[in-house]
Amino acid sequence: MPTQIVWTAPAAALLIGYLLGSIPFGVILTRAFGAGDLRTIGSGNIGATNVLRTGRKGLAAATLLLDLAKGVVAVLAVRALLPGEEVLAAAAALIGHCYPVWLRFRGGKGVATLMGIALALHWPLGAVFALLWLGLLAATRISSLAGMIAAISTPVTAAMTDAFDLVPLLMALAGIVLWKHRENIGRLINGDEPRVGRRTGAPGSDADTGAGADPVG
Image (cartoon, rainbow, N blue to C red; front, top):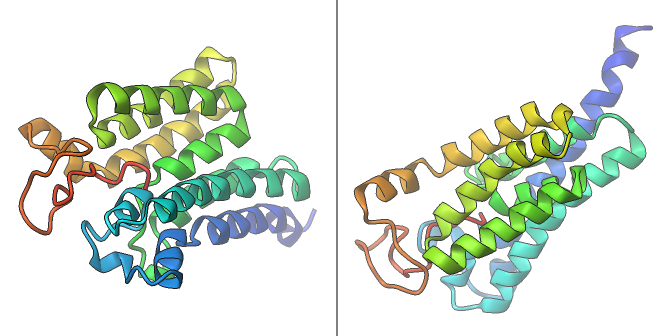
């Protein structure tokens, strides 16, 4: 089989996944509804938590759902069009969200998009993800911690539900999410990571609004 044909499907899957993942819904919605440039607000992150800092709860909820949905759509669309290539689309979607070319590769932190990817790849992964994220957020009020632990749960849940083929991918994607949260990890170690609803921290930091650290970015 010619090399060109061999690489057509994987390349198309990567492109579809990246293009869908890189849609910056937070930036688009805040601009469209007159809430300003999200990259100049709060932490500058493009995720739902930073959208909440504009005071627009509806826009924040829409951003969360759309960032989740693009992970779902990337996997399901490629599964329908190019069966067997959805794992590549999943990886590309998260990379697209975290490193969108349109925003000079300064994207979100990937938690909502990873949740969508997990749901589409193997629904128990997404279910466990959502339960852990929501449960830990309610218990600790530290949204970055909840998001990171939920991300780490995906390869563990995959192994426990016999989806061993997904473990390497999910370990890599969880690693990206942790890397994007490296500043939050530093604050957690120092004991000064903000809790949801509490005003702490220096001006210009993630802690400005007490809304957490963009775990659903």
